[in-house]
Amino acid sequence: MAEAPGCYTDADSFEPRDAVKGDVARMILYMAIRYEGGDGWPDLEPNDSVSNGSTPRLGRLSKLLAWNDQDPPDTFEKRRNQRIYERWQGNRNPFVDHPEWARSIWG
Image 1 (cartoon, one colour):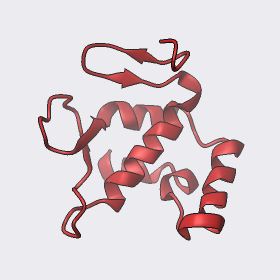
Image 2: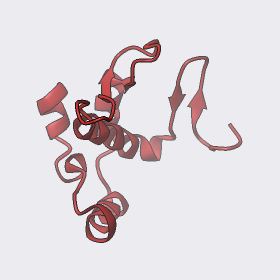
Image 3: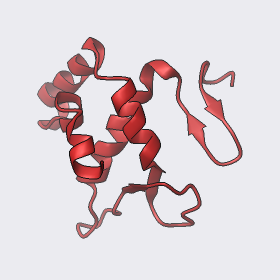
């Protein structure tokens, strides 16, 4: 895939390059706990289907958990999390600070 070297696609899915799989998983898992519906935003919940129609489901949960385990947060990701906290959002992605929480919630 020329636009994203090292990434993979097929008829119904996208897979990031190995070096960032955990980063992507933690971003999606954060969105799942941040966007719970009921406040005007959709409930973004991961599951193991890629055929969710118009339901706002994200990714294959089993893959996201595996990527989180296989690619732990590195210095770059931890620094990005800190910068986002300090400069823009005032909150952190808890899965960067505590990747083990993903398995506690969904495992």
